[in-house]
Length: 244
Image (cartoon, rainbow, N blue to C red; front, top):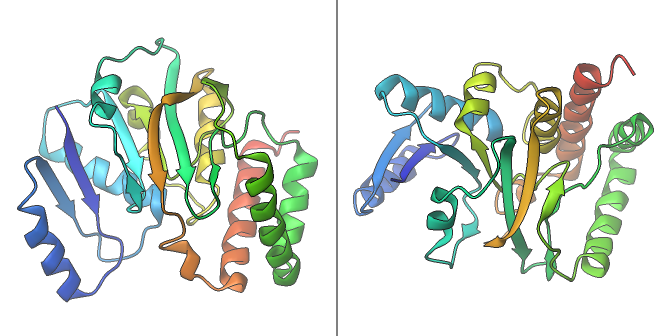
């Protein structure tokens, strides 16, 4: 009942060969796709999903988007999801995300939608790499202080992008509309598209993962990272806040 779709955005040819050999050892249906360029996180997901849909008549119930640095220790994790206890208007679900690096929990990502003033502030800060660096440090310190306790299940604005599930009804609507950002603000994009559809996002604390974060984006220099964040937030602003 579970299939694995991999989009290899970027790696050496040697590593690609090694990965494909290792995948043969997994007792699960695996689809491997190589777009020959780095599409980014969410766009890479859409690429793999669309290629998979072209090759099969099977329509999945849920599609989960995941980083490569996720650990799932609960053997009943997917069984809980396949039982589908969520109401029909819940189109996105996110698990409890524990970050060992910060000894904190990353979900709920945001409980409420950002005000336009907050969006403008983020764009302004991240157009200035030094201020962006300070903001990142302060945010990490804040997370260690205020996110030490796991929150109970609840409906939220957005869940953390490291691992989240989308109903296939929603995937069918958005997978052909390329995300214009790169690596960042995917959570806001998903949340805004759901808001326009009058659908809900549910943080389910009974689903638990460990996120060994920043194995990819942690290698980015702050100037490049700040540019990606400011550009992606500008896209969110122009697309979803322009009439405000």
